Length: 164
Image 1 (cartoon, rainbow, N blue to C red):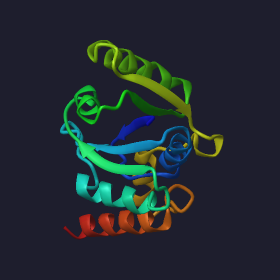
Image 2 (cartoon, one colour):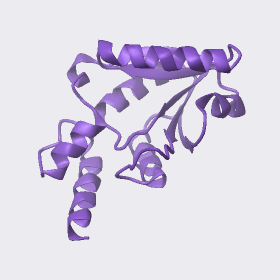
Image 3 (cartoon, rainbow, N blue to C red):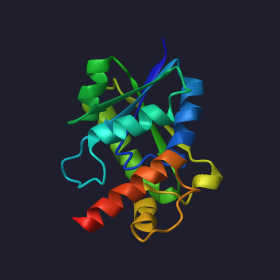
Image 4 (cartoon, rainbow, N blue to C red):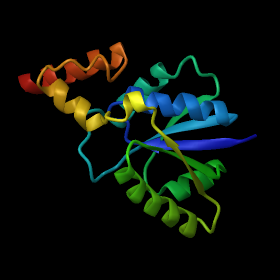
């Protein structure tokens, strides 16, 4: 069975992420979309909330599994016996950063983890989770960026934060 991991923060999941997920799920028999618990960032949503969002967003994709991890991707991939990581590229500037990570992962995994880059569809090339959060924090319209249920969760989160 051909399997791959698509790791990321997914804070929140966007149409750009879903574009990569759909396309990668057509290439691999099983795609594990895994939320990274990055202790150096302060996410809007907890790991558990992001996993639930992704499960809902991918519920019609039978070969997509949603999981989470912390630590090194190479250790997680080894534990899952998966040898390909998927990374999305929006612009040339993403490539330089992602290439360095891909080469590091390949080196430190002993050659066991390769990275496959998928370029984001042009309609989502501008899109980032950070931009979505910034627009939403000012009650901007994010309907073109995320599924409706995700937008609702984002707006609720910001309303709650304003009240706190």
